Every structure is written in C-alpha cells, then in structure tokens.
Image 1 (spheres, helix red, strand yellow):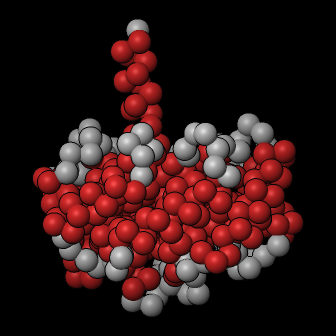
Image 2 (cartoon, one colour):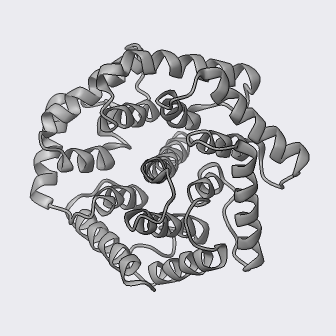
Length: 332
C-alpha cells in the first residue's frame, strides 16, 4: 500500500477510535463519517474541541432538532474544524431555514445541503441557490415521482450551485438515466442510475462519455471478482473515481487492499461495516489520496465534497433505518 494512502487510512482508524471512546452517539457508522470529516482535513481529532462544540450546538439548537439527532456527530466534527463554531452553526441554521422555508418538521438531508452551501462560501447566494434547488427538484419529482426522494436532496442542492442552468442539469441527469437503462442496459436499479446521473452532472464534460467511464470501471471491478454495492450511494460513488489519473486495474487493487486493511482494524469489520460499505469507504480514501497529490484532473474539489456527502448519507440512512426498526419493534 502506498505510504500516502496508508497514512490516511491509519488517521481514519485513529480518529474513529478517539471519537468512539469519548462520545457515544449510538451508531458506529456515523462515528466513521465524523472521523472522515477530520481525516479529509488531514487533522487529528481534538476531543476537548469536540466537547466544546457539542455544548455550543446544544445551546444554539432545539433539544429535538435534527441538528442534535442522527446528524450530530458529523455536525459537531465540522464545527470543531471551524474558526468560530458558534458562527458556523448559526450560519448553517440560517441557510437551512432558507432551504426549508421554516416548515414544521426538520429534514436532516437539508441540513447536509445547508452545510454544503456554507462550506462552499456561498451563504450570500443562499436564496438564489434555494430557488434553483426547488425548481430542479420539482422537475425531477414530476418526471420520476417514485425515484425522487429525500436521499436526492443534497445532490440537488450541490447541482443548484453548479454553473449550469436548471434545464441543462435536468437533461444531463435524464440522459445518463435513459442511456444506461435503455442503451447500455446496465443491470442496476433505476434509483441508482438517477443518483449516478446527479453525481456526474456536477462536473463538466459529455454526460455519456462520463457514463461510459463508470460502466467501464464497474465492469473492471466485477472482472476482478469484487462485489460492488448497488445501493444508491455505493454505486453512485463510482462517479467520483472516473477521472483519477491511474488505470482501473491499479485503482481497484488499491481499493481492495485498503478494504482488506480496514477489515483487520478495530471498528471496521463484522456487523459495523459490511464488505460493500467498506469497499465504498476505501474508494473514498483512495480517491482523496489521489486528489491531494494533484492526480485528479479538474474536479477534485467537487469529487471530495461528493465523497463526503456520500459517507454522511450512508451513515444517516442507516441510522434512520435503525431508529425506524427500533420503533417498530417497541410498538409491536
């Protein structure tokens, strides 16, 4: 394993251990996502700073707010990296209110979207981005009412920040979807194809050429005997890897090597992470390592942001599913 990649993996393992030792957020996968926040910034976890930020979060948000529920670990971690944690959370809340139009119920995916806008330095454009987001989401919902749901929200917010008009974005997503479904006949679910289209539409370039790159990478992965996940975010994560300046065989070998390494690390095996999830997180670490070395051509910032969003979404969805399962068990 390359030293740069091993260092990043070891930092993730160390950060997760520190977070899990001091904070009992309840779901190990969310702690991995929180550890990735620090790892992506090449920072070691500062436990005292985390504790301070947790107190600041409680002071500035309601007890039953989504800011203090499933998303808390990631939000507190991001606050800990900010120069002014209190200003950070208050600015994110202000953007969130613009996106959500102060509806009664919180939406953890919109919290992620608000964080993306803030961290992109676009707080002064929040109103315009929110309008573009709503317009694009309505178009997608009208075209695919069953496919379009909460797990699309963050990508639609990111797309609303792209330097493309709504019609262009929508058409690129739809072109990717129909091309892979009807022409390529890729054996992947419709929801996964739409999600991939959203990720590919975030960057410049011909959408079909980008789609072909994903298909080629996916087929290479299968050719290596690797069972890659076909869930929304697991499959979509391939879209962040297609422009890495290394051949697919090398890339896949490195991802598998990292996954095997993590499997033997405390907190990354067994019931905590299944093989497909571990491969996805491994791909993020490898991709991020190449991004830092300047080997991603053009869209490294976008790919890094999307990779972090994917990690947070996977953790969030599993946490929410666990809560629903627990509630159903209690009620029965």
